[in-house]
Length: 470
Image 1 (cartoon, rainbow, N blue to C red):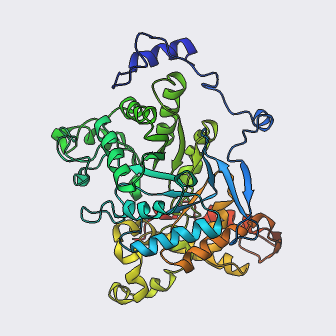
Image 2: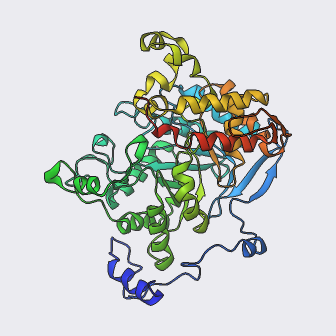
Image 3: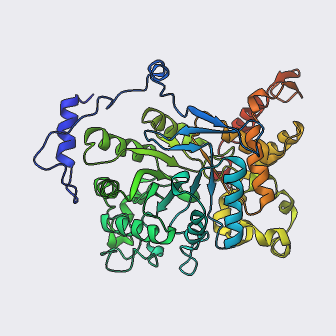
């Protein structure tokens, strides 16, 4: 193993100066006392620093048991255990509908946390870009700013996002699209602040990495050869990715000037989490601490996070903000009726016209063109056997999961919003056990909990969105 002194020497050798002057004359990093250490659960309890610990519960009109709040990672942000997603505002939802949904969630259910992005609404295009932020801006006008924890995201490397205000030629350099350069990150934040009508962002997230990682939005897993291709212009690629030091330096500048309070990542990998955390631990004056990760996480999308990111985020105290806890809405069971319909009939269906099923087919492919349907059916049947709706089962499992900080939900109607938020009152671990029917794995019926049965389904359909139906 590398000694600490050797590791320090190597880290010093790779540091770059990207406009942050804190490194100055000093050539020895300021090493955090916690650098390289595992979490100590006993010490965490003594110091009141338990991972994702609920710090308070507030009684609210819409919930019998109130809304819980946590401290988000290594920050002073106290956020509700449920966060309002807004990516439909501006396409599926009008200005008035978006404000109504946000007001209801904040006033009736104790939500204080919302998430947007510079590319929203989804699906992204140049004509509607920024509409979500403008709706959020109108909502904020009716609120005390300090009562809202506002999160947004800066897009990662993507040549098709050349229409973004920050990627207008002069800032895109030799790349020609959105990228995580220092200048583009700073310009992105300035434009977001204008649209949102505020002078600071509580949580700025890198929407996806500025490098090829594999596995992004349903794509194939990482391959070194593919990474090499994407780094070579003469091979149809772009150029080597911007280094993490440049990205983190830009974020530190934004924090230092008060435009951003904290930063997080999204669609990130264990490599990214650990690399960014290590840079902060050894050079805290230069690079900020990553406090959160917004990755896809649900009953049918678990393995990628649980097999790698979960451990990294636990030891580095990075809070998980799951997006798509209903797997594009499929875990609600609302798409089950389409399994026996042909595409022509689906397009004519009134409900389908309003949903991502037809509005964003590329986004939905990972959930529909895979074995996800069988897994969803199993979870829906399990929910119904316990007199729960499929939505209640999926969201309750995510809300009260020990890996989860705050769950990002989306709703296009007040009815959907109510069902999603009422599910917070349900805790699967206190649902009484029942006699489970005998299966091929059991010789006799046995007493089991609903959580045990979820794990049985998970073992059978561990990664269903990656198993294609051919």
